[in-house]
Image 1 (cartoon, rainbow, N blue to C red):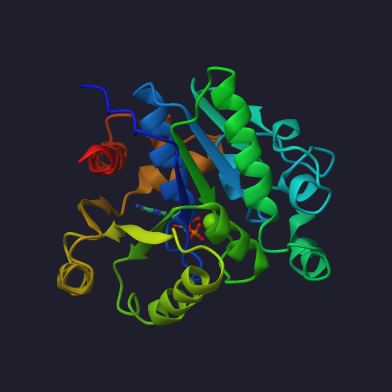
Image 2: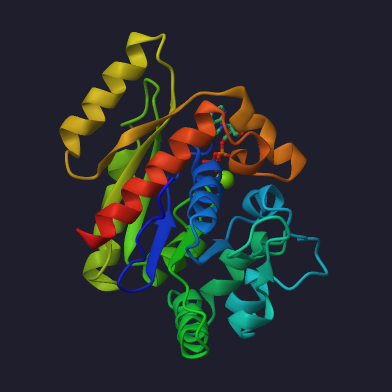
Length: 271
Ligand code: ADP
Ligand code: MG
């Protein structure tokens, strides 16, 4: 296939939805892998204490490993936690460790508690660019909550990517997310925009998936990607092998649709 265009500047996405199990992590790692295979330089920032994105990318994230916790709470430089993904060139990851679970509470009493990720990440991106290693895409994988860690991600990003699972309750709870984002835009990060919505776990055999997809498209005509991600066993198997579906089964429907979604995102940047 042809290569994806490089964005004019680093694009930082927060992948958020306070619902669990909607495909945030799956979307983060697969878009990141798809882009890295096209020669783009990609950084995944895992801020979910569960560390699922780190696992899917085969990045060690036991408690002795330096992680986003050491940056956000310890004030360590971002460069001290970044690891190269062992299987995928051009892909780096800032892992999450379980100590991040306590960070929500610990952040409350820290100065500039909403900006800590942004400050560290921006400094890192600047250093890397100066060293000729500009990062093209950053994807921040959020926990399923709208707590201070997610707020840090919204402040650090310029774009929000919302994965929406094609099921009955999809739009329910979305208003809470949109309200939060509005508050962030008003008080903390006026640059932030909801640029991208991806429909995940789409099941062609049910009318329900099609109905939910139509609904979401009607609400967000500009943001929803044309590509949808099908429900596929291969997608769900990949992380248990420490892999993305892009590497695990590169010709599967899941891999194909994540590549298409990644290309759409990359193409939108230069339009
Ligand atoms: P979140 O990060 O929002 O909690 P995950 O990405 O971890 O969601 O996905 C939740 C579960 O659904 C995981 O077990 C994942 O493997 C599975 N899953 C995600 N996307 C798909 C898909 N397209 N097809 C089948 N299973 C999927
Ligand atoms: Mg997750």
